Image 1 (cartoon, rainbow, N blue to C red):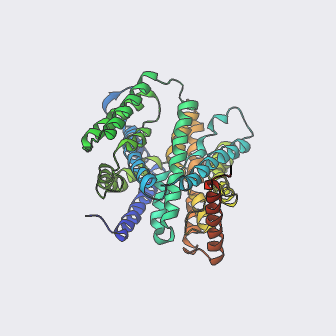
Image 2 (cartoon, rainbow, N blue to C red; image 1 turned 60 degrees about the vertical axis):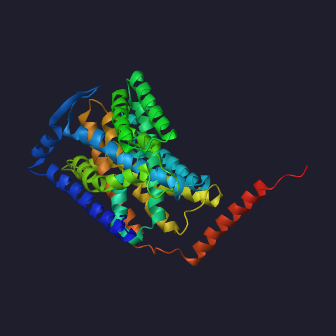
Image 3 (cartoon, helix red, strand yellow; image 1 turned 120 degrees about the vertical axis):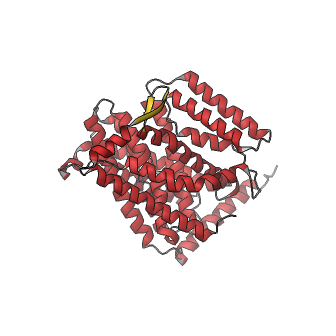
Length: 412
């Protein structure tokens, strides 16, 4: 039986609280007498030996294994919205893509400006470029009715686009040795799964088996393994218009396990950063550049491009939203834990001091973004003002007129 919207909202709020609690617990553990126990747990290795990595530690199992399932869920949700929901038309898709591009470029420029284009630090330019979907959704879930569905969808879609962009950056910039054979294997698995979907295979077990082999190939290729989740989701049949389909069944089945299991576990593993005794360390170029890239660059990049796109008629503002709410969502895009921490480790190999400094910048930038984004959305009236509704109606009216003009046949 499907859950009611009220039950889903309550579950998401509880999941958000569990996530934030797990992150807070990790932060306390990493800065107390339990620090050695915390790190020993994350560094403990078990399981088979995997290509390129050998035996996984607990941390790697979480980041490269469990988070692939999280991205599978996100991919399922976006595919459903893309074909049946609020992203079903090119006009609906345009805005998140534009916003995501701005949200990647501007933070990188802010970072490079703050570090003064120092050659020793330039490799960290992509650290503030990504958004952490899990933490951002957690904040939105706690906000409940103060964060309308249109804002959640906009934020999730932006995060998906710039996370895929971050994965592409990792593959092109930070991957020194790509295994082309493994990449070809991954492409072959995707092709097989897509063919199964095309020819009407609806049993989920075959897609889950394909997901495992795809994850293995992507892992072996040197590209971040979580991209396998998104690619697998794209091949699972949606059954457009059906109430029950393989995609919807899988989404419904794994949603509670991801939100109450995988996401809090990741929060506990990622948030355990040792804070410096001297707070002046935050104002060194590397952590400051990352912190401002996330906190300032994301706001300017996402909100600025959304505002520009809507005012120039390139895209439409999400229906029923206020500009303050869009600003709040843009601010939440500055929560960068997942990919930011991962890219930080790749950007400064063999330099643990720089990696730790990058973690501090990521933590502070993400914390500031979460607090400000929450405050903006919490104290913004959920309903647009009459002036904003008229402005939004004008956007749609002009867009509709433009469409009709384009569709009108030309005189010979």
